[in-house]
Length: 566
Image (cartoon, rainbow, N blue to C red; front, side, top):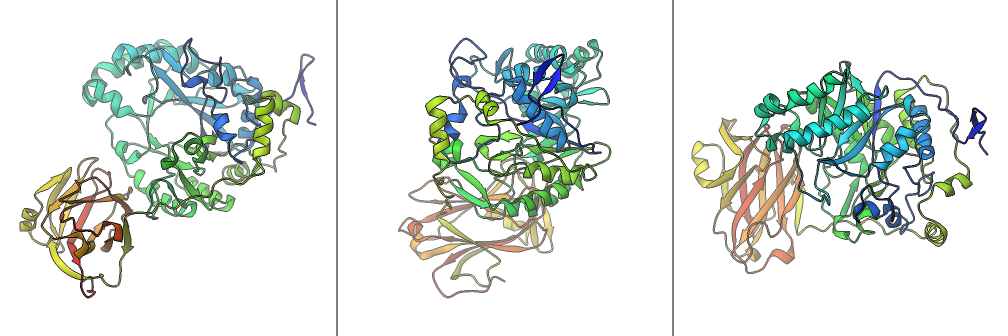
């Protein structure tokens, strides 16, 4: 039993937090809506707000929050979150916030839960406007009047609160897709001239400074030099920063993400906008995909350990800049994606202890306190037989991660190529471009060291080479020799035959982004090697604008004796 805290004679079952002070301001994303159930809508019509994700999670053995299948619109539940976060050295929450021209989603967590929690003033919070598509009644509206209505609502209800997160008296306002907002207002210059001043005027009318706008993006390199905003950050690294050839459904080691993120962060910190270093607690969307009948989207980071997570936190902490001393973790409670630091039955408080060791090393050892079983049951959205069945499900193992089987094998820097060279397309002369009739978002900028140098100028950058190389059963594959040095390294390979159009299949792979020449051998598997004739291949570069790649050659490899990849 825990000791009750009393105020005015009224017992309160959540003891007051004992914050672990630190210099870096550590934040974590809060995914709201764990109160969802029939009759708990934000509006008077049925929509996704009434579909409880806990029921999807209950179909599997894990994960299991220490607080159970909780209703996060309860102030008491939020007080546990606040207490545990503060005692781990976390100082702010970034609430995912869903709004479209006055229409709301998943708002009870913040407004009925967190803001009415007894200890809410002890921790900072900010809004992360998730302005992507949902089951909105009307189309998304990013017009100036709609944005003014939104900022007025935020100023009245959030920004003026003493615990709203400020940067030099400027309210931090995170935006999931800022480019879409800017584009809807005729571009960056028009947005800065016609829209942003009126939004800042609303803030000033409430005694605040201008908005401190932080674009958020799953691919933050796309906004690293964006002309609007004061800083930028990332949201999810679970599926992209990996050397493992991957596809969904599939899996890749968590260790690879930990190894690669430092280089990525360093590149992000060279941008024109300040970068708020952010990281990923893990990824396993089994419950959301298999439980939600989307098995083809299942993706898992395997081999997660507390030691690797702590190493990841230390690497990130070392890259926080003193001018903007913030660090962000995804996520506190993304239970459907397996991205959590909130205490769980599986790990207890170990993830929070890792956060505390890194960011509050001088704090005394924590004395983690827990709710009673009776409290946990009182918080639960699931009741009776549903709750009983969920607990019984914990005894049976979950489906094992699967490995996606590509139709093309990939080898990095092979000692030899598997067959004879049917054709070699070289890039050591400007005339080589005549052999590349089509390219998009890829600008040729000259010859360097006998290699063609290309600049990536858009998000869909590729080179398309056409030919008449004969039946697929006479072709082993394609080899590419190039160098690349960019923070984002996910590339793609496409091919076309006389029977199947370009794009019918593809091969994702990751370029080695060390700026050195490497050979990539893409070998067709037996199921592809039929009578269809190979007519085109396409090399897609990472969607990383303003980075460069240098190509030495592309070779079409046919049947025959092996050759050295000179």
